[in-house]
Image 1 (cartoon, rainbow, N blue to C red):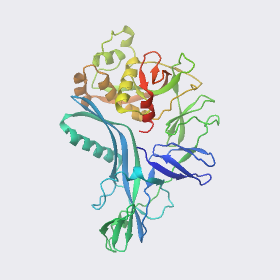
Image 2 (cartoon, helix red, strand yellow):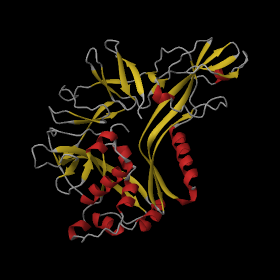
Image 3 (tube, helix red, strand yellow):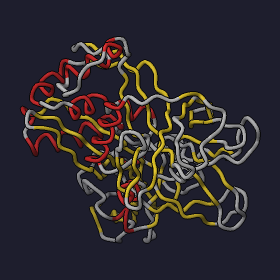
Image 4 (spheres, one colour):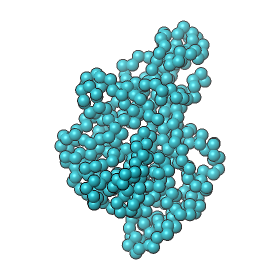
Length: 407
């Protein structure tokens, strides 16, 4: 479930409601459209209690699909958890359902109160969440584990210090006795407040036209000049993309990442090598021996099981495209960045294999280095219930796509 965040419009001051995954702010009052680029958003839980001192305690919120490869196969689990960023015994280990039940606010540098320094990195949070899964299924049986599509944010739980008692600022419940001379919070104070969201214009940097961007898009397209842009630290960065043109007038193009990689630990230089390694029952053509192997991954979020199936099917299809200076009229939004797609390569290899017991034990010894990622737009048609790839008849249920927008 996505969080609901209240943010002030920088142009008119109106109140906007966004989801945690939103990358586009559209003000319902003045109509301004701005792109959010903050890599690690900071949100405040509402404080309902008053007292002498307001203290903000950091929690890392982690949400994503965790895939685990064992000898018995590939399992997946949607993880949605919060982990305390400060070691303090009186704090709850998790915020529970409070972030989903309450409307959060974007933290700003002007916010009053004492902010504590977060001592838990994103890497450590991922490791902790992975370890919980390992403990549940047994660490010895795990051959490979990967996060796909994870989102992280920093949430602040308000604590209120009144006289010598510390209270939960959300519920008002007393937590502990805190003597006036206890300097724990001041000694763990955060010195800088770099909270404010970075906002960019939603106009094309090349021609000034309105960019076509969905609420969660990571790739933005300009239908006027035919360019594509991705979110980068310094703003919008232009990327190249290729398109496989459809046959029907009502074709819907879905975005995929085409990933060329360097693999060590397995002979996997060509598409023919892939078919042999995965033991796929196809007659290997002579030209496939020289066709450089590329893995494909959906550039959009959806159910973990369907995600792997589609990635494997499109990878086995090895569809090509060509550069173009026009964006397809109907285009499904790209919501998964190339960096996340690259993490799916081992999973796609294992999922594609007919005899998985032969591939899965090899995964720990395989290393993968991404060399090139290209966005490819593939044509699908709508048959009523599903979107179907025109040539390979690969299908994706439309309800799966709708649910994927909420992941």
